Length: 232
Image 1 (cartoon, rainbow, N blue to C red):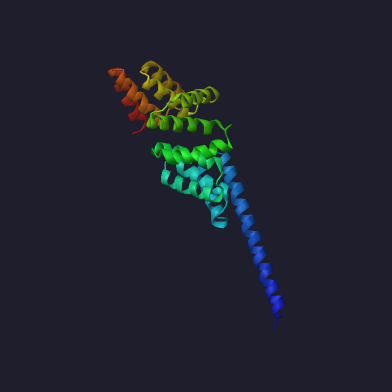
Image 2 (cartoon, one colour):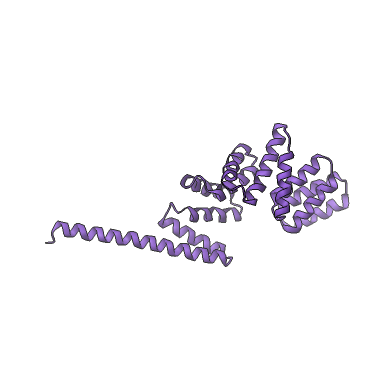
């Protein structure tokens, strides 16, 4: 019969080996996921990130990537759940704060959007995507409160000059033009945005509204047909 101390030592060694093995497997899944993500195989990468979470539920980056995949599939509920879990583990996580702010902006939950984007902006004011969403949130809050939108519009303008692909900032400029009655400028901003993101639904919706205000009936019909073709 083995002495008790030997049995305990054997169990401890086996336990440590299992831990090491789990960590190694999680690292392997994570590396595979990142390689698949870089190759554009996001669905397969998502499976690998979920495998990581089975082994390491507190892996912040894997959880963020699962949220990002959910959002890419328009599963906003799933994305919000994952992003909030990220913040429980890493409250200063800028990408999760930024994405949550944008989703809350879409949902018109301005108070929560503002809370997230302010944390992101405090930690990463140099991030142009953070500034784009901050401009959009600040603009909506200013409209809601009846205060000046000038600072938000100026930030959006600076963002678009730096990165013309960012739709949220472009929409601020279009909205500001609409609010001032400058319909041609609003249309120009939307069209510039569509050059960068031809399938962005929000831009198409705003374009339709601008054309209706301009009473360009033929163009309204063409825009409706364009949207039907894009979103059957």
